Length: 283
Image (cartoon, rainbow, N blue to C red; front, side):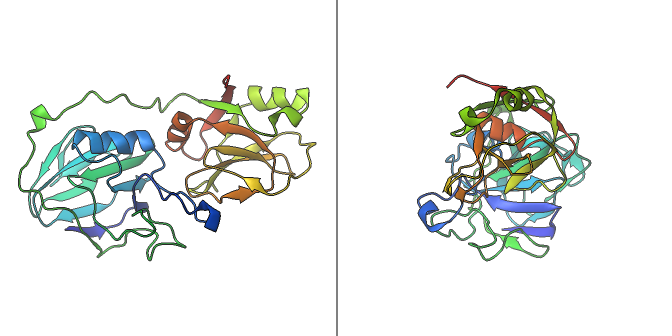
């Protein structure tokens, strides 16, 4: 078990997502940065879909009641075991009563904790991903006990390291493809869309990232149509909304761009106030 001593700003259990229920209006959910979560599980020789703990903004304080191995990836939040610094992207041996805590965030926004065998919280509709309208809890809370697999054999840290290709957390460039309604935009709007820098607003979350700056919108609303994580919608006011992992499954705003999977991972590590710039890629 892992006891939650402090929950952190916004910490949730996530796996790769909940699929096959979108026709019922159920979002995919899942880890915001799939690259970092997959790397954490890979380092532990876990299945890629093992549930991890996703931290946003700052980290929790956790007490382990038994031996296990963990890996921390993604944002660097200066992790510590019993107040001794440990590294991201490497296997860490944990003993019963060890306490994991975090310091000041150095870069990135979201960090991932994987444990050997994955977190064993209750699966709902085939996934352990927390989502407020589907699972009983939407975040972990102080006093929670998070079940984990038994782990009798600890990995050798020096034999379980991997050079992890990190996301470029500093680059403003977000690669995108044309959305279904892109070609309906006029030339002036397309130019602004692809040349302007946009700042991420304070209202951004796991459902969607909204951008502060607006552009001209001469398009009418569309019939309600399918949207997916990474869809960029253009609202009647000219504001752009980038749908993320907890997004709805349909929408009525023009879908002008679509983020690549790599770009969703990258954007999920950007904070409110950071600037981004779209770069159109050939499909």
